[in-house]
Structure formats: structure tokens, C-alpha cells
Image (tube, rainbow, N blue to C red; front, side):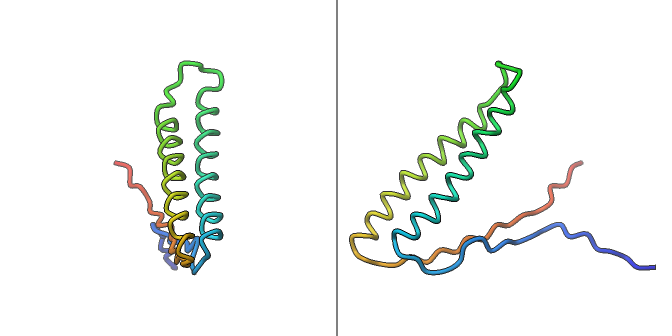
Length: 100
């Protein structure tokens, strides 16, 4: 009899390396935009057919991510002035949520 072990965690190395300020802005802004679009679609899905659906969570995440984009642009503008490169380490850590 063979036993199979079920994995409960996963790591994905999404972004790794050195980037110019412009490249870093493009990479991180693209990731933020994808996540914003995910929440916009989630909000639309929740409210489709139910105009009173509670969309507070996706609304707040969209706002948070939009704010992060502004912070990112300011940060990159400072880096760009000095001509420095940026190192990005972007690992997704995924784990199973145990339900009781």
C-alpha cells in the first residue's frame, strides 16, 4: 500500500531580480493592476442580481491597492532621480486554511 502525502503549502517565486526604476514600476504596477481588476470583478459578481450585496471588502481592497500604487510611484520617482536599480523579491506563500 502506498501513502500519498497531501501538500498544505506552496511557494511561488513570482518576481526575482534587479530592475531599473522604470522596469520595477512596470512589474509592480502590473501586479497591482491585476489584483485591482480581480477585486473589481469580484465586486461585480457579488452585486450582480443583488444590488444590496455587501461589497465593503472588495471596495476597501481596491482603495488600499490604489493607495499602494500612489506610494509606489512616489518611491520610484525618488529612485529614478538617483539612477539606482531596485531588487525585487516577490514570493507568494500559499497555505491551506483548516476549517473546524
